[in-house]
Length: 570
Ligand SMILES: [Ca+2]
Image (cartoon, rainbow, N blue to C red):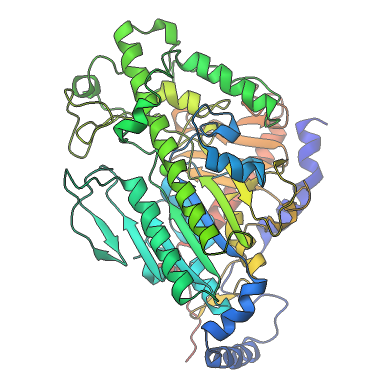
């Protein structure tokens, strides 16, 4: 089937979806607004009389699963062991071996829009979070939706959503906000209240602290709220730049990357093939690619070992090879430490007898990052690489290896930017240990999945505002079988980069190429090597029109915070 035929199969359904009326109008299946409003108020009053505490939770314990969302920051598609990586991640690998791995899970290519999707269930544009502004009043966060079902919610790590954490319905939060300092953070908060700065000599390390606070919250939950289900959002900042890791962790990888990124990419591809995650080739290195935020004085600040382009490894000088391999050793150490800390959180789940009935989801918020920059306290070229006084980034060469086998990086919406490993683990419901699931999925699916499992209907309105229908789908059907999840299209837009996926077809553009649309058949060409746009102009026209329609609709929805009509209700 050629692209035009593939598109016509599902295009009528997409047109209907795009034509659907916007929100702020009563849904067609509901009668008069007044009648519905009165009914809703009766329901709200009745619900408010039901105590949300141990008595509700007692019923919940047997029926409702706990949910743990573990999010890595800037982790590449093939960094962890069960996705082809050479980095030791035994805890994640065990989850995968006893759970499921998705081969086509997508994020949004950037930190904050992915978090907007995961917490709200909407595309970031629908909730005014890409660009990052204030979300509409109707954009409740997942803990707020889970609370009436008896859930308590805990957050530890990065936040990057437009409100304080507890305002989003979390009962406890350790919010790590200093993205420049793993060892000596200046801004971090417990339950939204500032903590004192960590000083050199405090033996502070962000990844460990984030896990420890999660463990503390779970420990308190077990002691005081053991009959209630919980949602834990564990959002590590690793392995986002700056590359900073514990010296004993770096030591384990000291010589591992001297072989260079070409060899590591090939080794990862072979392991991905063996695991059945891909049966295709490697995207070629792109020496022309330039990081978007490259600063002109970078080499002066970092030193002559830095390399601005993903050139063949053998083209590097000895000094460049030594410096570059030391950078990847730090990246690996950060991922290795994250896995060890995940192991401690998993031990806590076992200790509190929550192992069987907890759905664990592991994701990365975007692909590995090619950015090269220095910020924070700057980079001291005399300090050991990876220490508090060094500020290094992965850069395009190693980001290409981290995103093996795909093209491009964080920020771009080619597959390297938006593809994430995705592990689902739940002993009570997932019993096809180690299996793969191949249907495309997206971080917008997380909220519908959790609501589905918790038996919670997505509310049609929130605090007097109509809400759009959630754009994602529950992934619960994947627990048993490798089914296809029917959907009209998946949409991306970030800083001038755009994409749309309909079935196996993907339309994608980048601002560096003047936004020119490229068309790929992802089923046979996920490395996006053969652009079909010239051969199928009608398909490009139809898909780009759909992208424009979705984009316009989503941004209109996101602007509701200032321009929408508020439905009044006393
Ligand atoms: Ca990120």
